[in-house]
Image 1: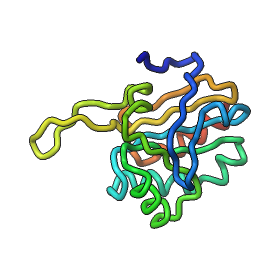
Image 2: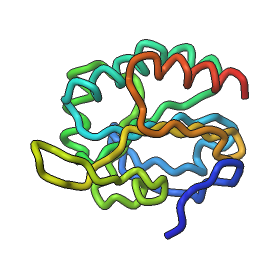
Image 3: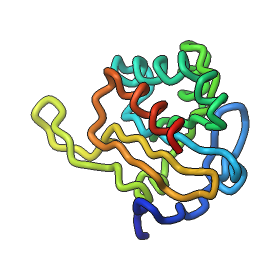
Image 4: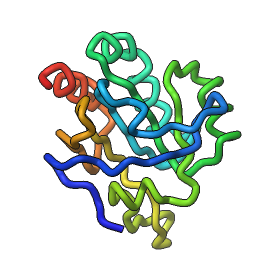
Length: 155
């Protein structure tokens, strides 16, 4: 499977989401999409990042933008995480890693001295026509959402 590239259309995808939904990229034509990948539900950095997106959700909506969070966690875990944190956007379950592979976010990580593969915190901005316009890799949570919002407004 090839991966996405800046300035090129993102291939359509279909992924299970919270709210008993299936999300397809093609269903969001005419809206911008912020697709943010995070390692794991209920961990400090992932919770902070989600809360930052959530507190700015109305600003993204005014900019005609849909926020979608993605991790390899299952739907039940996502539903619990979303409810606990009060997220007002959907979370996508990529347990089979197809979306992660499409966006090339699975990277080697060191965890307590062990090498393992995990999601590298990354965000992608897709325009109204489905074209990838910007990407952020190796994201540091502090200030990230502000940068994404600014980029979204400038499209």
